[in-house]
Length: 143
Image 1 (cartoon, rainbow, N blue to C red):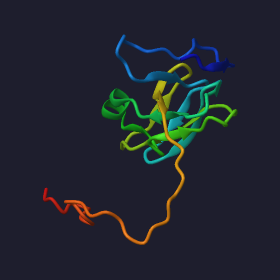
Image 2: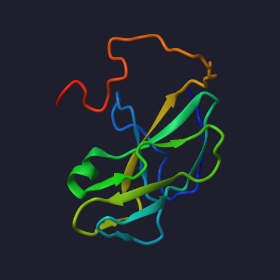
Image 3: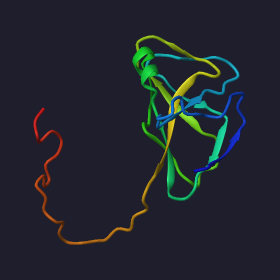
Image 4: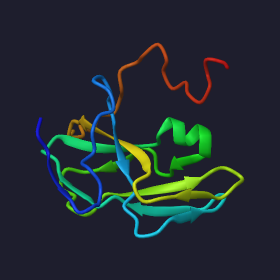
């Protein structure tokens, strides 16, 4: 599948790191290093603009290495970019560590996955079919 992209950043287009990678790393597009203090959140620009086909979304997810080593995560994970959005992709990062973390221009800050989705139509009914699980939730099967 081909997706139209405008790259106003100083960096290469996002790409898959390995042949079987699901996500592509996105990079921070900054004029200066940003210091993200403990429990602080900030919108980090990427300089990227995309045009997804109908029936697809882009999901913005944390990078596992950045989360483990630095305590940095994507706050609204996964973030969703809808097919009709044409603005710059921005990433809401949060620092969950106890130390301030520097976010530098070109740092790989998240991963983006392109995924198909369905558009549904609601069918109002009075009764739902029964299932083995029923209404059980929130840990009803134990630890």
